[in-house]
Image 1 (cartoon, rainbow, N blue to C red):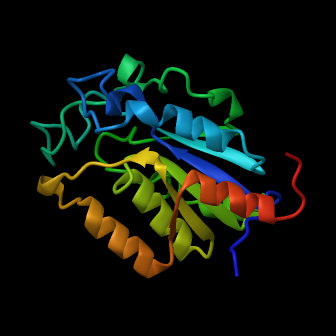
Image 2 (cartoon, helix red, strand yellow):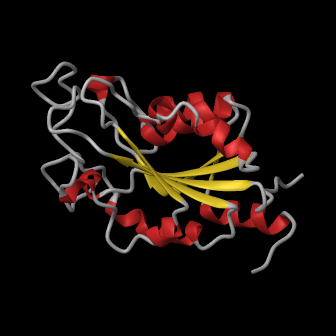
Image 3 (cartoon, rainbow, N blue to C red):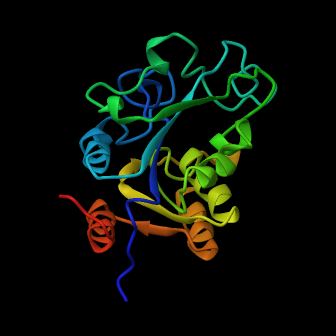
Length: 208
């Protein structure tokens, strides 16, 4: 049976579609293909989701994950009120129902929106949401951890691969293949934009 998504109870979560994760800011943390996902994300944003949430890395200059700091993993990126923290040019950000900032605590790493905002899942459920489509940057890091947490909270979770971009970071033990295998084992549905659209068209009601 072809899976369906009811637009009345399905939300979209756009994760960290920011300049600091792309070639717009090459000295930060560019993810291969990050800049190129904008048209794909916009295609999802054109679908009739019940709500659209976005996350935004919002780091202080002394964040613990930055090189020379406690975790010593990443170059400074997406620093508060810098070009790297801005959303990608051309992204239809006017569709966002809310923007959830994360990573603003200098001593706390928050890959997933659920780590910084533990009430996020309850908020979605109270809004009538039972399914979430996730996309953005990076597929195997912030997208994956958000999807994993939402799945654990009982949501039907889809990850739109062609509207996302990933990167392997061996020093942090973050690998694309490993994350996908874990996600599929948990029941996260890895899908294309076309599959998401077909699923929503199969739900009721649909106004195209």
